Amino acid sequence: LERPVVLTGIKPTGSIHLGNYLGAIKPALGFLDKGSVFEGHQAYYFIADYHALTSVVDPKQLKQWTLEVAATWMALGLNEEQTTFYRQSDIPELFELTWILNCVTNKGLMNRAHAYKACVDQNVTGGADPDEGINMGLYTYPILMSSDILAFHAHWVPVGSDQLQHVEIARDLAQTLNHRYKKELLRLPKAFIQEHMKVIPGLDGRKMSKSYSNTIPLFAPPSQLKKLIARIKTDSSLPGEPKKTQDSLIFTLYKEFATVEQTAMMEQKYAEGISWGEAKEALFSLLDHFLQGPRTKYEYLLQHPDEIEQALHKGAVKARARAGAILQVVKKTVLGS
Ligand code: ADP
Ligand code: TRP
Image (tube, rainbow, N blue to C red):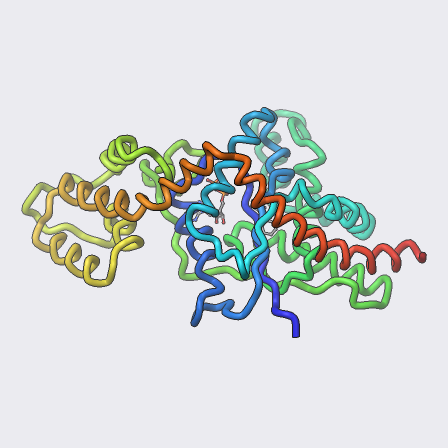
């Protein structure tokens, strides 16, 4: 019996930060472990570079971010046996399926897509033409994303809640196609949203995001990491005054990388009035220690991009075999050949 498929993509639109790591990469790397939600599944993880093309116009930048995202996953220990890791643009089959899906997508469905609507709203608020600056890639983004998912008969798609609508669109399109041709051509995928997963705040207290320049890059050199941690906003409580762990980003991050014992000890230090300076120092040492191995590997890979390319190529061969077989059945059906 075939192992069910977990599939997710990440856009190379900037350097990976702690929010991306804790919110998306770390959980994805653990999904297939013994005792975890997707034990016994197979994973398809990919770099959505053609999705990034809706906003990144500099090819050098796109290439660099693609390599960085790939190196990040590889440095953190992808389980190569259970995971197919590839780059979206290496899978031409996706675009044949994208066209077929285009032809079953109601234009109205795209008009209602959140990301597109948000751009239109922003234009209207600013007094510009509603379609100002909106390319067809952004408009049809959900169709390519549906293709990403449906071309692999994915069972589960782990995403942040902002992507839920896109996975629902993929379900919708699969259903419409199946219904039109009276055949189970595509599998209806399910979104996997981790409800308990909190949003990691950035240096300024807003959601940590590339768009807000408030990030701590995962693989910042130690000296920069230290400086960025020093910039984390704290309240004005003095050394010796008890501190709350709940609203402390320093504590939130510490907990993510600490053992249970380390966390309990830090909780006690907060109650005893650790100074913010010491708390930041403790966070820095913990993070720096955790990152040492991965950082060495990350830097090595970026200096040897051919090794990254090799890994991506290997992934693409596997991915194309699966997507190709699925596409063939769909093509035969819709073209009547
Ligand atoms: P960004 O906001 O930096 O552009 P993306 O939207 O590209 O990040 O998100 C990539 C992945 O990382 C998504 O799965 C998203 O849910 C997750 N992610 C991004 N920022 C955070 C955050 N601050 N906390 C938790 N998860 C996050
Ligand atoms: N749109 C997703 C994001 O912005 C990235 C993505 C592209 C994706 N294709 C996908 C995620 C397919 C899951 C499945 O984060």
